[in-house]
Length: 222
Image (tube, rainbow, N blue to C red; front, top):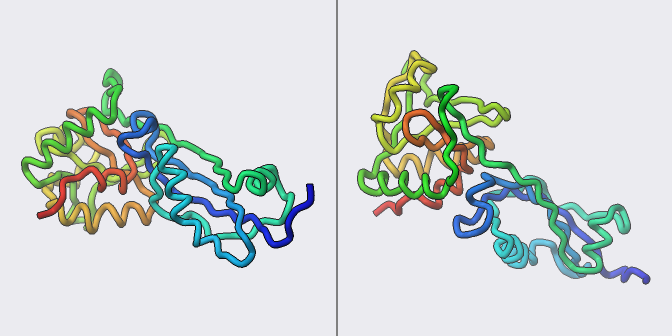
């Protein structure tokens, strides 16, 4: 079958997080999704933004940011281009499993992230505050690196759950953070730096989640 010279295939990669009501939220914290779309030469790939959002949403993913610019792919350069010419849209998904950081050797990871998130948000909704560790000496919030190499900033819904973690952060003190600061300053910065939120569960577990997924679940600021 001949290829219409007025048609091309464009590629872009996106950083995505799971839709809370979708099938991925309990198992995956994020995904890097490469998309190939068929475009009429008279059109621009940006005209397909709504279609891409809708397609990924239907598969349980929400776009957080773009990882690459749009690039025009040479014809027949790979199987994804060939498939996009036929079907109009192709996505390749690289999912990142939800990671649990455990404080003690006998600590047990929770089995349902969404259940833990629900309890966490309920507490925040009642107080309007979150908690972390901050060092005046270093002028920064606590951060860490998970076994996978993922960088994170820990947040808790209660200051009582933090005490056990302070041994790893000897120059840090417990600090409360208001919702406005978390939603409008901390989480966007984490997203731009490709870091995760480490959501505190109990006093011995951190659950890594995408910062914009976390932001989406937090109570609205009145």
